Amino acid sequence: MASSSKTVAVSFSGRTLTHFGGLVLLQQFFHRLGLRRRLTRSIRFSQRNNRYSVSESLLALLYPILLGLGRIEATRLLQHNGVFQYLTGLPVYPDPQTLRRFLVRFAEAGLTDFLALHDRLRQQMIAAPQSPTTLIFDLDSTVLTVYGRQEKAKVGFNPKKRGRPSYLPVLCVEGQTGDCWAAEYYPGNTHVSTVTIPLWEAACTKTPSGVRTIRVRADGAFYDHEIIEALEARNAGYAIVARMTRPLKERVATARYRRVGDSVSLTEFSYHPQGWPGPRRFVAVRRPVPEEPSWQLSLFRMGDYVYRVIVTNLELTPLNL
Image 1 (cartoon, helix red, strand yellow):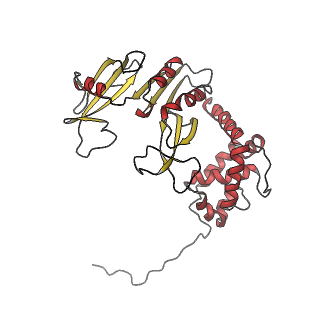
Image 2: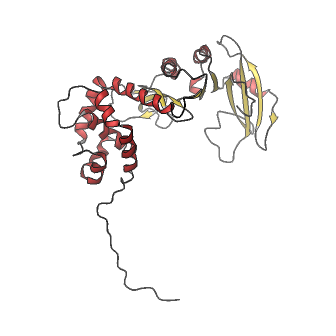
Image 3: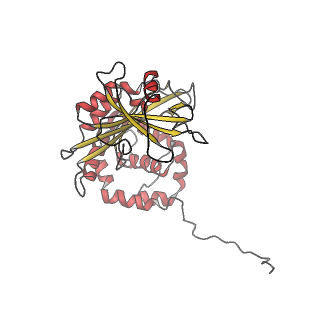
């Protein structure tokens, strides 16, 4: 074997390189969009600290979010990054306390105008190159665990941190583009079904005039007859995961299934849940229990199978649904 070199010289160059260098692409997009100008024109309110304009303060918050810095305190490292400041056009990056104070004022005086600007930008984006005729809305909720005494945080359903206070963000996102059409924050003990209809109505008021078809996808948290009736009132198609009550389990267990693959069987039936105004179409998916069970599949397990049941008004075959 040939002997290796006894002396290795290691050197570094490019002292101004930064792992935020890719930010230049985002900066170019914001520039093309005229985002700073739009923020300046659309959002105006008085500030105690005149060192930063409203648009500069908002960009100082937007950039870290897009960079994956989840906490304001983590933005301290940007104060000493000259390349970041050069790319963003911020003369000096604000300290965390300045950003916190700005957020308090912004929530009271600027949030409504900010959301209106967001809606206008989204309308322009989806209209190019042509306005859509079909939208797919995904309704979703999540649990945001918090620590300490956070305002309006409550103890509610929290599968990962039981007993911890949390917030409940509820969102309506367009499934094809990922754009957020409506979102709200609630205390962690809020029941999703009680706040979904206003969120859904808010999203519907923003749909372009050319939209002819709306379809909705949602998990079991949105399995509620009032929500389904609200969707039907707007002629929206829907596919919602059903919660497995005892009568529904019995109906699923006695159904006849048709195999459509090596490990998947399907069936469909009409079922009238208790308290609902009438029957709806249900589709059940049956799979063998996996070797490594997934909590996402084990909504209902019986014997050697796991089941997922969907309530729908879409005229699709069970497999396509």
